[in-house]
Length: 304
Ligand code: NCD
Image 1: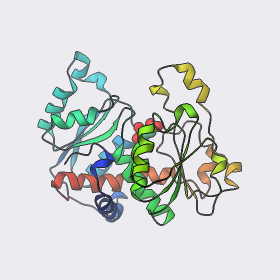
Image 2 (image 1 turned 60 degrees about the horizontal axis):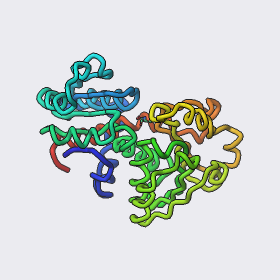
Image 3 (image 1 turned 135 degrees about the horizontal axis):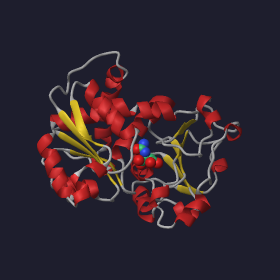
């Protein structure tokens, strides 16, 4: 199976992956060894920068006894000579058992899936989707707040260009979340996404201040303003530092509230917040390993 969008999963699929991820925790921490994916090869093709996504996929594969190859910078590949994505994918499929792809073009993973007889995992396609991030986000919500259903979640920041929140909003609607979308009007959630989650039964509220939800949210999921996606740099400057989570703001937080962020953060969470009980973002990044282990197991076994 390919993993192109979070829509490729049913609620049951997601729950199953999260349950497998839970069992993977000791292996992810290096407390237990495994050869579950021995002799399997994962190719990571990263046409855009990445720290967590690529390294956690590689860590997941290596800790399960498999191997990884690939590139983190397309500058050293034949893409530079004008090779099409389709041809690059055909080659990676010939050299590996599963392909993890990040690409600046929305729809790239969908296209890749057409040319690959090996599973394609979308690790971010432009401003499109980031389904594996969503799986680890859901895992984090379940583990750090105690449950996944009916959570009050505020998505904050760049909801227009942020692919993590496009995938996450959809998944949270599946789990009956109360959603608030907090963004400046120019960076609000795309209309099509709002209509989709409404069709699923969610009643998202739109707001533009974090103060409005600080006392009620179970999770505040803040995102980086996606500088690289702005056609006009002066537009970026206008919104660059619009949201900031500070320890002062947290004085009014609901008990047990967690701050999440897909990372990298720029200035939207001050460093003082890191040592508070609200900060969940570094744990969240670690949870990328067990979650991606579960996913690699699922797709390389060729079924659920
Ligand atoms: C995100 C991405 O690449 O979409 N990072 C990640 O995968 N954890 C978020 C971002 O770049 O802001």
